[in-house]
Amino acid sequence: MPSRTARSGTGAAPGGARVVRTLLLSDVRGFTGIADRHPPDAVFQALSRCLHLQAGLVRAHRGLAGRFVGDSVTAVFDGDGMAPNALRCAIEIQSRLRDEDAAQPEAPRLRVGIGIVTGALVLGRVAGAEEPDFTIAGSTVRLGARLCARAGPGEVLIDPDTHARVDGRVAARPVDAVAIDGLGVRCPVYRIR
Image (cartoon, rainbow, N blue to C red):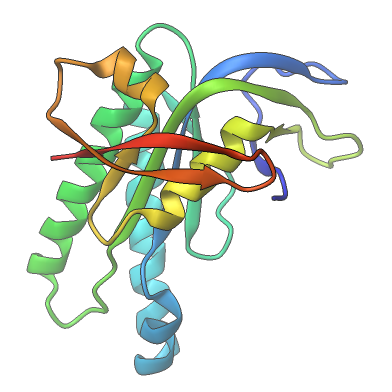
């Protein structure tokens, strides 16, 4: 899996470092079909609203929104409360997107699946970037991508490390474990209710 990039502000050093962070990864479900069925201007207005809403909520919950890749967002949370902040952000994203759908029934309906993971990853500045950027890589990023891909429209899935950091603050139900490609292990998964 390729590494994800995001705007600077993390204090990432050249050469990188292994750090513990919480990642929120979201992706619009069925976006290709939506793009095929609606006029281009309507698609990009809806997508712009969706991405802008998510980026604003990530910032409001003390996270750093990464670059948008198509219809997906990667956000990094650090510091005290990183996992609860990411989870509150994800729940608010899902709620606000439902509200926007109800307020604009004529617009393309965009629903996201969200995966949240907490763990060690490699974080460092991208060499030669015109703007100061950083990149993240490692098995935590890979697991986050797997959870995001598995989350259905309107769902939030979290890994055991995130669950341990938010246990008791939110209702979560175990679902089938996911295999992490290339690592030969299966990871338990929790769905937020």
